Structures are given as structure tokens and as C-alpha cells.
Amino acid sequence: MESLVIHTEDGDFVATYSEQGLARLNFPETSREQFVSEAASAVRVSEWHDITAKALKEVLHGRVPEKLPPMDLAVGTEFQQSVWQAMRQIKTGQTRSYGEIAAIIGRPKAVRAVGGACGANPIPVLIPCHRVLAAHHRIGGFSGGMDWKRRLLGRERAQYFQ
Image (cartoon, rainbow, N blue to C red; front, side, top):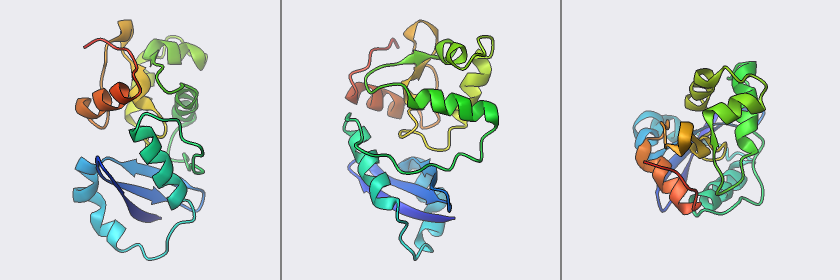
């Protein structure tokens, strides 16, 4: 595993790579405290880092990334991976509810489990869990915190209720 810092106008994110691709993306508030020592020890530059940095900056500006890096989602269960794949299909500016995601993956009663999978998403922003809302377009929770969720949805001009 190799961790590298991505400097953005919104703070410093930390991207962690495995041999298969991007494995984790941490928000600035957690990144600097928890992962900066690991990032500082990273000597070899990942071949995917430039793609990750560009894609992250595009999403942070409310745009669709031209290209995403390969992603290593082996950390997730089969169920979590199906939720993460469904979230990747949500277009910029659109939202889905936890219930809609549950229905999309063929598990309509697994609404709470979908919420858990969203919270366990190792690559927030690029796997857009911020676009998943609670019932009736209520904002719901977010692993990066509510300020980040509002900021990302606002930049994408997505509609939601407080």
C-alpha cells in the first residue's frame, strides 16, 4: 500500500493505492491526522495518482471526471461492492435514496444495510455516496460529515431537503 497527498482548494486529501488501484480516499479533516505519516513514507509515485488527483478536483468543482483510476474494492463484502457499483451509476447532479439503491441491487428490504455500505465506502467522492439520500430526499448521513455532503451536492446542483 502506498499513500499520497492530493492538495485541493478544499484541503489535503490522502489517496491510498494497492497493486490493483485506488483503495481508499480520506477527507482532509481525517487525512492529515490519521494518514500523513503513512503518506510521508511513500516514496514511489503511483501510476494512478495523477488520474485520481484530476478526477477528485473535477468532482470537487461539480464536474464529471474525464477518467477514473482503477479501484481496489476488495475490502468490501459482495453486498457492499454491489452498493458501491450502483452508486457509481448515479450521475452528477442526481440523487437516489437508500431504498432506491436497495431496489436497484435486487435487495429492496435491505435499506439499512445499504446505509451501512454507504458509510463503509472506502473511496467517497469518487464513488459518490454523497448522492445517496434518506427517504423523501432528506439529506441523511455521510462519512465525510454533513458539511461535506452539503458542499458536494450544492456544487452539483442536486436537490435535497434539510
